[in-house]
Image 1 (cartoon, rainbow, N blue to C red):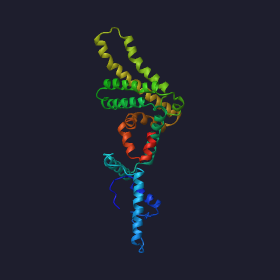
Image 2 (cartoon, rainbow, N blue to C red):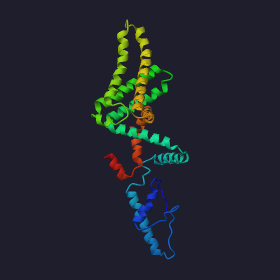
Image 3 (cartoon, one colour):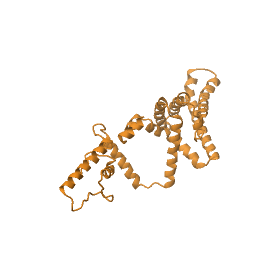
Image 4 (cartoon, helix red, strand yellow):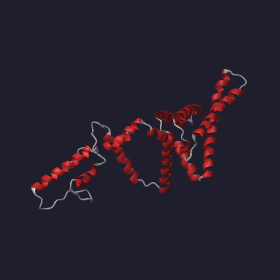
Length: 282
């Protein structure tokens, strides 16, 4: 038997063969063994069963078409390498559990307040901007804070305006609810308003010197908000839970890019059989 199409599901053929009445050796490489009393008619019947099993497996969508999925082999190779490295590099169990807890919290957050397609698009845009701000923050804090605050407004607009009320779902999450996020955003807005109100004159020199000072105070407000939330979670839960929330917050832009990227969704559907892809689409 020759597998002409690479697939992550070739091992399923033995189950289709068993449904046809052909039982392979379930140990080792799955060799095809027959007794010495096999006749030509027996081999002919076996061939029919093999073909029936392969055709049924193909019709169920377990072998993907190379023309329809041109990057199939590349994606399979990447996933195989990732799994092989994961099997060789032993990650400590506490770290695995911590990672699993962070990802579970991310999933709960997505399900609670990320159902609207436009909101997901806004999260994709804001996450890209946040990653840019991470890169330039050490070199130009003013630019990073200005771009980051604009991205924050875009992000919270999707939560406050586009998403349906989800206070009951947000109540069981570790992070801020929509109302608290709105108050945080108002705090950012009040800082430049207070500077403008305290300014003795609206000259070009005063206005050009204001962004750097405002950006520094925005940064301090950000530290106060995050630090206050961490302290609250330590008091209410424990240090581990507070660190789960902190790591989730810092890495949200990265995972949002993956979760809401159209290319990722299409790649995800490539590795599902046809029936599963239909259910995902529905």
